[in-house]
Image (cartoon, rainbow, N blue to C red; front, side, top):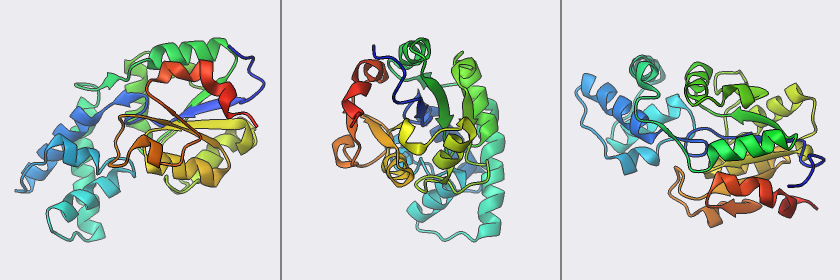
Length: 226
């Protein structure tokens, strides 16, 4: 594996990238909706709603039900969802294939690692700790950190500043158009992982590199240079 001269850091999205959290998100969303008398969704429908934060998840769910939801009501539903999701955030969630090895290889190679996600920080930390990878992360930025969430570049730029790095020295790994668009807008190289939470093919996202598994990353970073 190459020395960690470039990139200086590899940052990861969480949902659909490092972990398959859809089963817990799906269950928590359906329980939330049921508490308001709404019907459930299939997992495939929920997968298309994930990626832009909890507020967007609730807005997309109500839109799919053919209903409008005002901001105050949305925020109440968001709070209800988080109260259900938080205690079960790791019940059905699993690490994605190759995640553990990828983080170990990259860490041993001297690359600085982190997570940048639209998911709230508390649930993000819980998941990373549950799978024993929290200690490998030099930085964890949640969607509630303050800057605009992905697909805006702000969270990624915030992470780069916190690490003291230029965006061009960072690679971002994600699974959706939100991730790739945010990385490109931030001036970072983007890796897209196949099989994530998006209705688009990974090859159509505009990433600089498309991979099947996370443990391919250490051996293929050199393809992004230049």
